Amino acid sequence: MNLDSYTCKLCILQRREIVNHLFFRCNFARACWNQIGVTYISTRTQWNIITQIKGKLGVPFYMEIIILMTWSIWTTINNWMFNSVDPSPQLCKDKFSSKFNLLLRACPRLIHLMEAWLHSL
Image (cartoon, rainbow, N blue to C red; front, top):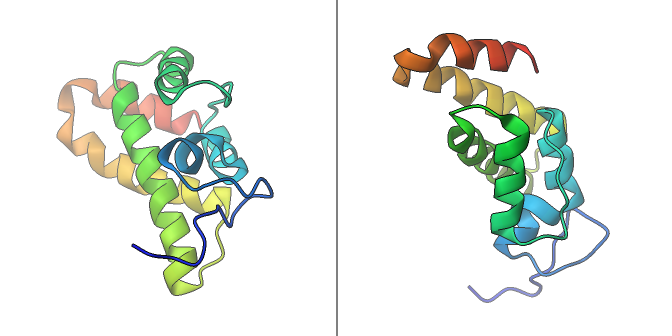
């Protein structure tokens, strides 16, 4: 897609909006992760960041959390760009929690652990 600019509009860094920046390095993304208690060293590679997040979460459903948070960040940003809905880390967390609640039904074996984790946020 040809755009006037490929820089991130959500942070002061004005970095190129690539996957690593969009989901892990952008100040907005880091604030969203922080909403669910996840901090990491953002200057590392994407895979190292995922490994850090896995270690910090310490739960067997860490990948579901990572996927849902990146989806929440993506849809929050898209809502801002296409629907003029002001983005906020709290809005992103609310989206995440809503989708995570749906996931509970799909994982009956882990439901109690997942509910406890969600309620700890």
